[in-house]
Amino acid sequence: MLRLKARATREAVEFVIDDDGLSFDITTIPDPTHLANLAKASGRGLLLINAFMDDVPPPLPACASVYPMGSPQ
Image 1: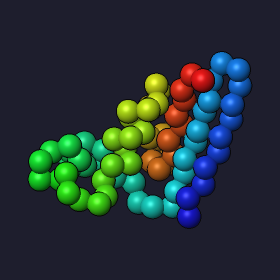
Image 2: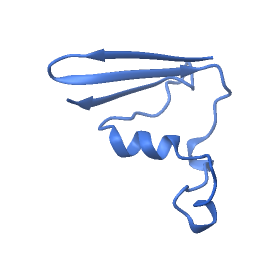
Image 3: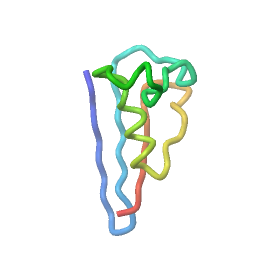
Image 4: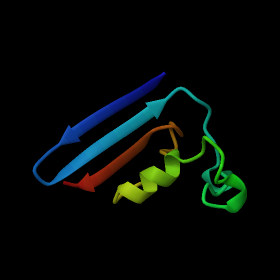
């Protein structure tokens, strides 16, 4: 199950995404911009998150699938 929490203030928008999937080592994810991966239909989620968010910390140690993210409005 995927859970999304969102909070907006005048200064920022914050999202917390949590899922029940297994955690993973982010350094082992193939580069979606590599020529061999361009035609694949998956593998762009983290690329987009990192492109559009100002603050994407590593997963929290207690729950590796929770990602708090923030971006100014």
